[in-house]
Amino acid sequence: MKKYFVVLVWMLGIGIYSISYSSAEAAENFTYDLEKGGAQSGSIEMPDGENIILTVEEIPDRLPQNSIKSSFRTFENIQNKSYLIKGSQALIWNASFKIKVHNKLITKATEPKASSPTGRVYYSKLKLFNTKKKASLFFKIDQWIGGVRAVQLVSTILGSQLVITHN
Image (cartoon, rainbow, N blue to C red; front, side, top):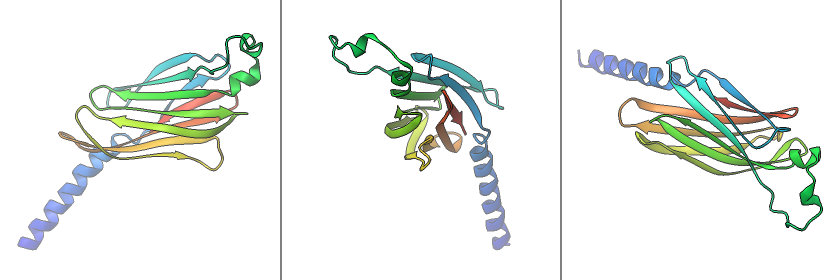
């Protein structure tokens, strides 16, 4: 009888974990126009009705004010910039990271940040893929109520657009 009880509790635990883990599996995206630049944001409605806010901000270059090049903004300069990618889900998580884009390739991914007002982030990893077209921030949240949640923000360059995906 004791074995059956242990197996039942174990199966129940796996079921609850899989429900909380699978709630963030559906992939949605937001498209940032690299040619337009500036700050652009949008929201994604998840299957459970919650909204995720995604924002991409262009980080200005630090060129001298008297430089002739600082007066002109060419297409090449637009493509060779740094961007701050931010995402948040109200009362669940906030995350951000920076990428540097050069010739339509992500050359650097830096400064990963993830936090949760209703739990703690116990694992995070920022990864730049070998193709240099994709960078991702993956983190896990141990929520005080609601179990474990895994979140991934992925930035991918497709032509003159930066596509931000939430998984």
